[in-house]
Image (tube, rainbow, N blue to C red; front, top):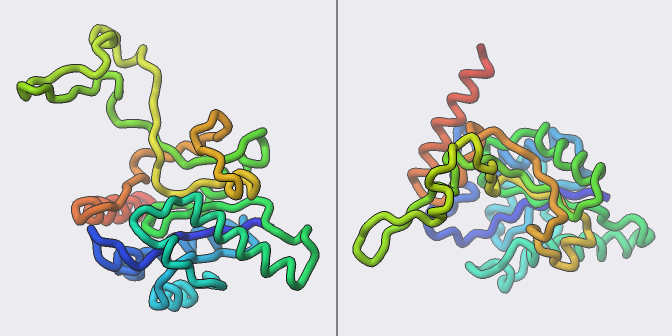
Length: 239
């Protein structure tokens, strides 16, 4: 069984009620739910939440909420691996009570609730990467806009200092491309999630996403930027 797990706790602080705030006509979590369903990759699309209102809204848009996440997994320090392990264990327990153990979860994809630019096709590509390679995970990433080898910091005198001065004379085109988590989704085998294997363990495939379709949403500026990107994407697709 393949499942999507969308973590959506109710206690967001920087943007209150972020996971169900309206984004371009519907609760932002609905975009993730719909992309997961449209991808056709999953036997179940679940929302893991500690909040009854989030659960009810999630069900309206087609997700299942077979459990309420325990409070100890819904604080500011709860990690993705813990949430995914709880979801997989809950699904496996329910499946084993009515079927055989072979009906349990084989792969699970963590899809973030605030990823309105996510595409079903990218989710499918992630599954293909997971199935094709001998890897534990397949993570959506995007390339840094600027070579990180040229990053600078401020010293104690408020002066700029290069983090990697050895690259000061290297041409940009000769620098190794670098990537970061796109904040959209991460596929993993059930075994990898259940054993909390590190994502950056050398066994993770990359699902490369264009920069124009990536925006992490942590504050109001991020939210506004995501709205502009979403509208630009709609305009581009309508041509």
